[in-house]
Length: 242
Image (cartoon, rainbow, N blue to C red; front, top):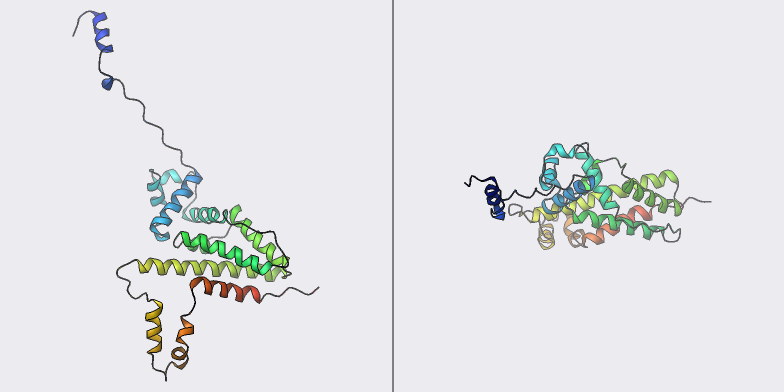
């Protein structure tokens, strides 16, 4: 190496750029509630609700589980965030006393379709007491539609609960069936034709009604049956007199 300090300095400056000090690594995006919710929805959409854990969400975010606890309390907290995010997408109509039954079916159908996009996520709705403002907004809207239809307050409150339970259970069943059909070891999930064959093959002396009405028992699509069940609930609500 040159002894002259000036030559040493010149030699340093002449080094290839690749040997210069490396640029600082880009900073990681901060963990936020929004990013946690995004990651949780990604897990449910791609792997199903059964795969949703704090550890799995942290892995999607490229961090450790402890990083999430600055923003959430536990897994139940993630469940509430998920349902709140979905309910934020529900469009609520202005309550119309002349069309309140149709409005209720429309809101329930929106919720059903959102649940079906994320297999099994409706289980989260069954497991939490809603405190998220977006979830409460939808509950308020449904209650407002019922009250606009002249339904008594306590009846409206119980009807709202019953509708929520049915929509969640319907979506959960549909998600479970679809997931099982994708597994090679679940051949027992039957199609309509095979189910019809099994019902009509039953001994008539033991199963006279099932055998005779087999076609009715397996008739209709999922959406047909969904609309029928919501109609059973809603159409039996009677406005209070006066």
